[in-house]
Image (tube, rainbow, N blue to C red; front, side, top):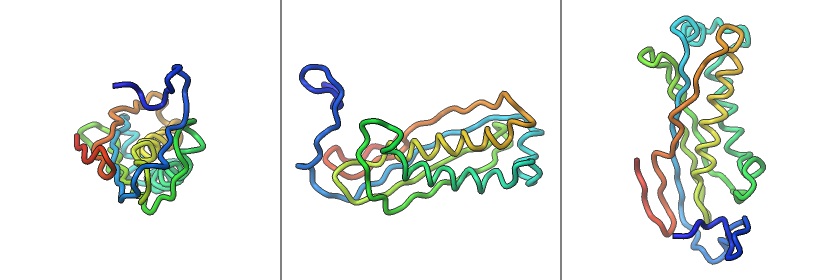
Length: 156
């Protein structure tokens, strides 16, 4: 199957979605950021020097989802109807698990918006804790659910 973002000559292009049906679309993504137990304690106790790590990262993820078309060259600008970003401390990592859900009604999906939300939320956590730990690790970023449109439902 050919990649949709390349034309017959192999040049990158924005996919034409004008003939696609308008449907309800949803996508979910997940990821995590690992850190030391001590750094996680700063996150959960609210003692990070830059303030509320989880609240700030949640807002950053929401804002990022709305800016996806400006960041990823071939993404369509979309009227997003919902973005939620959840950050859950996990002592077993240790670190923070991040999930994002994005919804729209349109002609193309919102997987990229969900992935962008998770990515920027994780980057924000790193930015806020780097004063105490410079070697946090961001990983596991992936789409876990996509529904709506011609290709139907995908669930990891």
